[in-house]
Image (cartoon, rainbow, N blue to C red; front, side, top):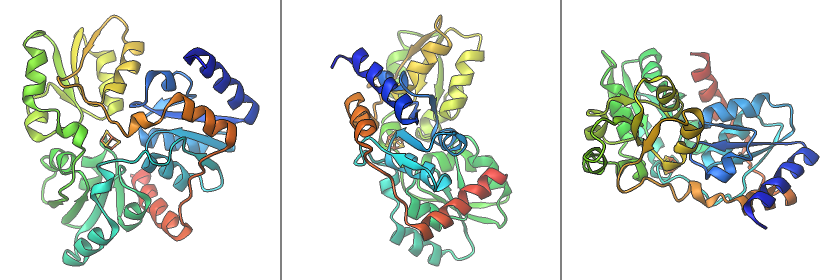
Length: 302
Ligand code: SF4
């Protein structure tokens, strides 16, 4: 089937089967266009929890669909391709986190939402790229073990006073490849462009950027800014919503272009098959789910 035909078929089927389709900003444009909601992982999980539909088809990587299941245990959550994982989430294994907790018994574990359910269950509290600083400031205790993203942790820890923050040695390889040189190559040709980046980028990039923010914050920034040209330091998929929200502005990507192959494993064909055949349901073992939900809810209460 052609793309448009497939999209029409997906729209028809989701109405017929009463399914809500959620898509992350890093999904392919043709998938974002058939979604009922496009957002960051936590926004989407909150939408999933309040949506009236009994089935959620989550177009994103596995930890995102798991987060939706953790917050909506009574709903059916489908992922079009369960093998779509996250290279950052893979960098923290439960056994390693348990050992680190034993080595630092007074440390509170703050886990970035980009981890699997087992790690969320071991955390005291979850954070997002937008609220990590606030979470670090508000959590009781003077020592924090921040997992798994060292760049995001370092960026926010800089502003947190009176606390020791131990950083896990993980990183997102896609954002790690955004370097000052990869931005300068584009900036040379567009000297007036504002550089706006995600905090998963390395410190050498965040320190020189004009603005640092989560995907939702970057989107809001380009809409509200008076500037007309931007170099976007995050995964290429975000440009689809930026172009929709600010069609008269110009958006450029670092060279080489940051693309997450895991996110791109979700294709329109796989979404269609998932919808048609009710595959693949996401499951989270109940004791893990309950602990993970507690850590997420602690963040939401802040
Ligand atoms: S962009 Fe990085 S953090 Fe996001 S899903 Fe891909 S590997 Fe994981």
